Image 1 (cartoon, rainbow, N blue to C red):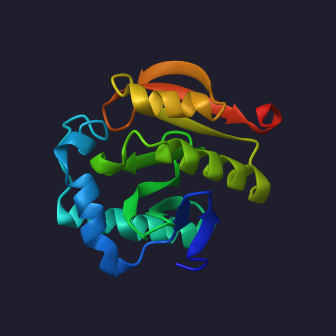
Image 2: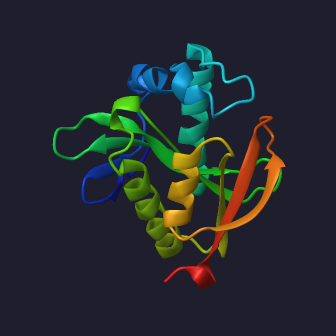
Amino acid sequence: MKDLDLIETDRLILSGWQHDQLPDLMALHGNPRISRYLTKSGAPWTEEQAATALRGWTDLFETQRLGKLRLTRKSDGAFIGRAGFGLYPSTGEPEIGYALLEEHQGHGYAQEAARGLRDWFFDTRPDDHFIGMADIRNAPSLAVLARIGMTKTHVEVDYLGLTCQFHILKRSDHG
């Protein structure tokens, strides 16, 4: 992936993935307490699913400069999780998403990464909006969407079978 250090915030670097970092992605999405909000079954990812996701994120970045990015902490290089933009399959709209290792949750990293992504998105892309959604049971993720300025739109079952609260952030509403 080109531009490996794509976004920098006060405490984080959001960068592209390397294929040899698959174990980090497995540590994240292979954890059932994290995966419970990512699919209807809540099942942890298999190594094959993680490798497929990694290839998809790399391809999406190379073709559209979107994709989930690797989060590392500046102070010590620790892997924190992933955050970035996908394309929502039903509509093709850019969609923000994030997931953090359990030991890094509750320290403001998701909000910091999402703010950095929001600003990067509106500074570098022509799109007039992006969407975000989270499982209605996932209060911390819903709070992050609100804190970065997103507006609730509706609740629906997403393409993965989760009942999600959807949000939108329009360029015109971004300071």
